[in-house]
Length: 408
Ligand SMILES: [Zn+2]
Image 1: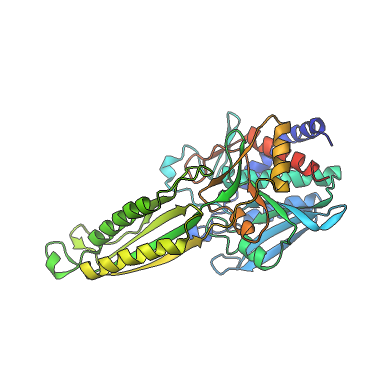
Image 2 (image 1 turned 120 degrees about the vertical axis):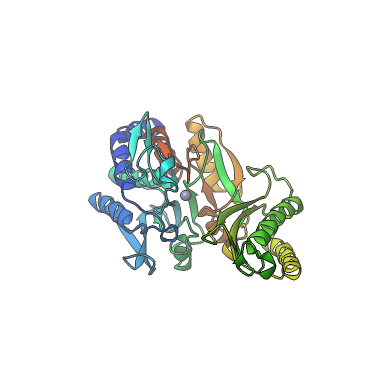
């Protein structure tokens, strides 16, 4: 099918695409580790659509007692290839969302998607609702039109991306869903003009530090050890020294340097006149692939030892997330070339680069599967008043179908 026919076909679906986006985003799917109830209900909606259109699918259940249903669902729909059934080109999107954060910062109800000026506002509509709906409709068009590629075309609706994919893609990799010849497109990041193809990621570490001192009355500091004060000094020193030690630039990435940010801070005492005996904070680190996380941990260990000795506190830390960046996907990989060619047909001259990590693609790259992250988005993930542009969902769907046509 040529680009003109595909364009007409996708445009004729706009109303359905929009109503599906609204229907799906009305079903909460907050990750249980963000105090949500999980993706189960949203998966039921996706399964309903697949059934209605007679798309064959497989559900991979992963046991998890954090959710009421006792399991997290991953949905795989696959349209078999005509020649090479050992290879699959995958499209992967995630069904979970983060929590809405401060509700006062939202102008609309995050759980009641609203259409306004060509946009749909709501929690998770861009991250990763847009990806879910665009790959779902790519799948439906293939099914309805009988489009077949030479290789299999697979669609994965994955659980648990927001907190590390243990119940999602990681488990799918463990269960050997992927094979050596596969390639993948992950629409979970991108740029507003659709020119950015992500082929590399930084290493990512979320470190949670706990400083243990001794609680005492605010007027009697000599009887205790102020963990809050020590924690504050430690946090600032770690931030400053890490930024200085790992200050290199790599223009493949945006921003082109490693980042070290103090993020989550946990509550401590209940009263202004109590010196806290414990201080807990998290640092989010995104590190250029040239540095190994073990090297950073070594610096952190030495700093901590100095604080323990000098301040008479105990300090422990844990990694909430720790992924050393895999080797980037090659710029001349077939999936990169075909996606670029599909974009060129839409007059979009794309370029390859790297981001701060945390998408599904890194896990696939670690398995030597060429994987690109691409979509047309305004980068509103995890922000209040998150929205998706209707024209972007349309464009992504069309670009995916055009890319698939290169495999036909
Ligand atoms: Zn996402």
